[in-house]
Image (cartoon, rainbow, N blue to C red; front, side, top):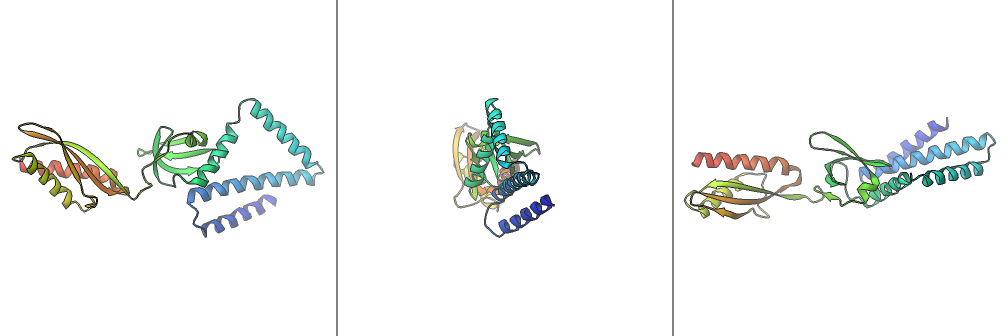
Length: 227
């Protein structure tokens, strides 16, 4: 019965959180934390109902925790603490594309002990929260726009300036490529027949992986037709 009541309370807590502007990951973390605390409270109440002194249980738990810490397993508490800070400070949200602890992927969840990522090739990665907290967090989804860079070699269309104008024309025709900030093109190498260009253009953050590929394909087709 007590566990049913706990589930009802957790359900009510979830509904209350939905009315707030709290990010999904932070809300989910709080639900997990409250659930764990409720279960601990139920167990203590159960022992008290049996006539067992709760203070002795708490003392016993303290001894167990001390023993765990003595065996070098304090990582559990460290991960829990790191998870709290990640939920509070919100360096990333659900579905953000991030690099943390040397791993890159989309954020699936922040749990009590670990952070879950899904890589672009659909690989599941679970990283202990303490490793996430102690590493540089690179969030590629935090800002609304991102820049993509391409380095390509083109046959000269008369001269380098004419070639650059032709590339810019392709970028202007693509509706997904932002014109503010305007695309930039730099010459990295020039020969009698070819020019190496560094192309930098801006897109909405959701489109960067797709658009950088489609722009390259568009440029290859365009210059193939001209040569």
